[in-house]
Length: 408
Image (cartoon, rainbow, N blue to C red; front, top):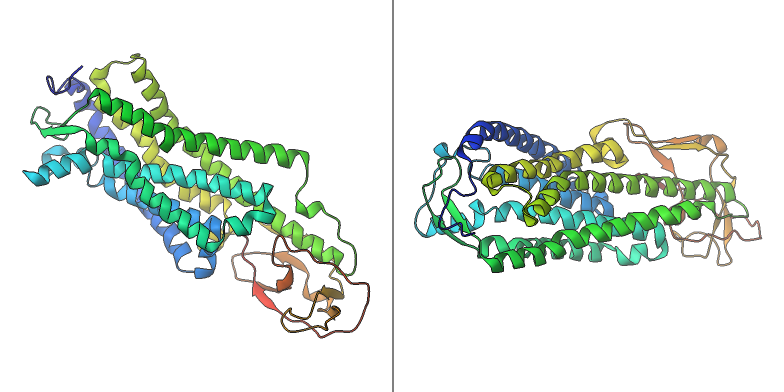
């Protein structure tokens, strides 16, 4: 079937004239909400360098940026938000570039496929955090995470390359859509399916494997917080581990919910592709149906910030909302172990017991809308650190270290 012989073969003018104004209103509303919500998330995360040091927050920031760009590009697409009658169309060489980059939806699919890669990377990051906690900080260090993000951004421009390699020409046959007519060749379909396997289906399979394995492993065994710690300060160390276990669990829930919403929003497009392959739908409604199945993908760009604000305590704290993370009451030990002499320059070489604070100073751990600071040992701040309580009960130097607790 050659589209160049009949440019209107994929266009049902009657159906498009009735449905297209409704779709344009839906796209305009969704794009406005996506721009507002993603810009807010980018502002909240980007203004604090301490928050951006964490790998999970970097992926959230990357998803928000891709959603923001995706929503902004919609305002450049002809007949998505701006009717084609009010659209200023370039001519000549600029018109050819316009057809290949904008009208072909190449620029729109760049942030879409970037979001797919970000979701898959977040699933792998959560898998390492839960299943391989001892290797997590080495694999997802600041440098490795930044390198991964730059690589994903570079690949996102290459994944939809099949959209700009198709032949196109200017035709004024349709008064509802862009005058650019894309001529699909057999080799273009082959290239599309090959690229679609690596840019969509393979990341989906990897992400599904990560969350299935996380569910299987966490169902059989407990987290690191279940390990028994003996010696002075054991109760305090255990509650510290429990805090970190709760944080890891909440971040995993957030990433899993984002993945489920992502699958639900992309499912109509996947189903429609299968129906086209097996010729189960009419191609006369292709243009209008392509807009219909693309709308949930754009709506996903708005849903992601809503998920972050609902499940991520760091973002909720930045928004001034009440966080859901609560810590139980614990009895504070009068002494905590300090291993070696290099911790803050305190303690003797054999390892000493440093008296902490009065039991009344600990109280109930909680994070509310106001910034609260608690006295905490920085030596216990690492999820993978091992603290061994010495047998001796020598006197040591009083240790006072105040840091701000960030719930991820």
